[in-house]
Image (cartoon, rainbow, N blue to C red; front, side):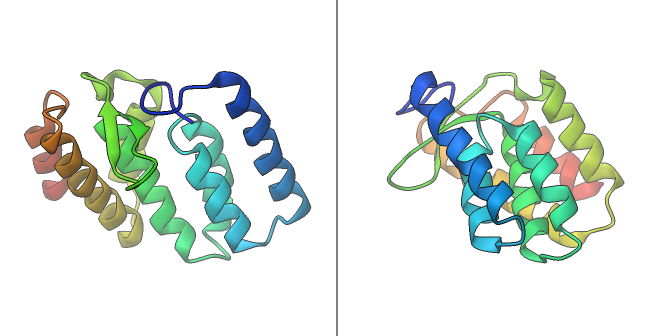
Length: 151
């Protein structure tokens, strides 16, 4: 669910969120459950998503990629996903002002895991392309790309 985009339904979101978190508790080592749960949570609850992914990196190589995607989405300010394509449908005009976006920037600057960085960059480019088609790129997009490539 999202705060914007095609399906902003807080009541349904809460029910589905609780179901995913329950599934993770019952199957903590299942990569498919973790992937789908964090995919569902990544826009509306990035803090919880990060909390689930960081410890999984030790045992699940794909978790680095998913974490990078999360950080890229946060830096881009994506707040809505197209349910048919999976591409960004909307973004905050000033995304890097959120606490989680600042945390994502710090995490990317401090990591030595190339999968996280490459995934974040890929997410920023792919979702940035979708937002550009909608004339909805957030302010400072070119600078964000340049900073990440040069860091």
